[in-house]
Amino acid sequence: MRPSAQALTATQEDPVDRFEPNLRIPGPTGLPPTVREAGARQMINHRGPEFAAMLSRILSGMQPFFGTTSDIAMITTAGTGGLEAAVVNTLSPADRVLGVSIGSFGDRFAKIARIYGANVTKIEVEWGQAADPAVVRAELQRDNAYRAVLLTHNETSTGVMNPIPELAAAIRELAPNALILVDSVSGLGAVPFEMDAWGVDVVVTGSQKAWMSAPGLAMIAASPRAWAAMETATMPRLYLDLRTHRESHATGQTPWTPAIAVVYQVDEGIRLMQAEGAAAVFARHEACAAAARAGLLALGFELFADQRFASRTVTAALVPDGLDWKAFNTELKRRGLVLAGGQGKLTGKIFRLGHLGSVTLEEILGAMSALEFVSIGMGRPVQPGAAVAAAQVAAVASFGLTRPAVAAAGVGA
Ligand code: PLP
View (cartoon, rainbow, N blue to C red):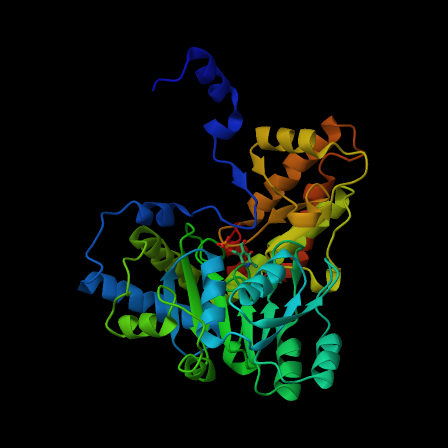
C-alpha cells in the first residue's frame, strides 16, 4: 500500500527516519556494519559443514568470555528462554530455591522457578542497591538446604551490577550443595566474568547485548556439576533440554532449526571482539560507562544506582521533579537519541542510557550533546558543552590512555 502524501511528508520530516539513530538502550544493541551484512547472507544447510565450523567458532570463542572450559549450549530463544533453560534443566518441582532479586529481571528469574513448581524463597533487595553478601550469608546460616540460588549479574532495570564473586563465595561456603545460576544476559562479554574460578554453575547470556547481534540466541554455560544435575532434574523440558543441545553440538549441529541469520551475526560479533581484544572491549565499556555517569551528573541528573555497584553496560538516572519526561524524550528522539524508560515500578521515574555491545565514546559524547541541547531548550540550567566535557574527562581518566583501548573507543589512534 502506498503511503499518503501527508504520511510521506511526516516521515520525511522525522530525523530519526533519515539518519541512523544513536540507539542508547540496554539492548538490543546497534549492529556494527559487518554484523549487519552478515545477517543478510544467504541461508546455508544447518546440517552441513559450514554451519558446524561456525558453531564451533562461536562456542570456543565464547568460552573465555564466560571464563569456563565447560560446554556451552546455543539455543534459538530470547534471553528469558535461556533463564528458563537454566531452571528447568537443573531443578525438580518442590526443590527449594533462593531467589536473590535486585530488580525486575531478578523477579522474572524467581517467577520462572516458581511457575515450574520450585519452592522459592526470595531475598528482595531495594531497587538501586546490589545484593549484600552478608545478607545472603545470614539467610544461608539460618537455612542452607537450598538446591539452587538465583543471581542476576547485571540488573538492567536498575543499572546495578552485583558482586558475583563475593556472592558466589558466600554460597559455596555455606550451602556447598546449592547450584548457583546466574543471569548475565546484559553483562557477559562486556565485563570480565570468571565462571569456573568463581564457582558459578550456570550462566546465561543473549545475542542482542554484548555480542553486538540481533535478538534471537541465548548462550548457556553449565559447570560439570550442573551438567550432572541435569541427569536427575525432573522439571519438564523438550525444546530447552540442554543435554539434547549438547549432544547435537558435538556433531556440529543444533537439535532444532536455529536462527541462522543471527548465528552469522554472533560469529561476526565475536570475530570483532577478538580482533579488538577482550581487555580492550572491557576497557571500552568501562570508559563509556564512566563517561555516561559523569555526563548525566553534569546535566544535573541524579543517578539511580548505588554508585559503588554502578553497571558498566547501562546507567539509570532519576527523572527530576517538574521535568516533562514525555516531551523531553520526544525532543531527544527528534535529535536521533533513543533512550530507554523505566520498567515495572520504575516506569516514569527513571530513564536508562545503554552502553553495551556496539558502543563508542563518540556515541556517548553525541548522546550528551543531544541531552544538553534539549535540556537547554527546555529551560534546564545547563551550560553548553558541560556534559560533553565532563564525559570526555571521565573517559580519559578511565582509559588511562592505553593505546588500543583508546583506538577501540574511537577517540583517535
Ligand atoms: N535478564 C536481563 C538482565 C536482561 O537485561 C534481559 C533483557 O533485557 C533479560 C533477562 C531477558 O532477555 P529477553 O528480553 O531477550 O528475553
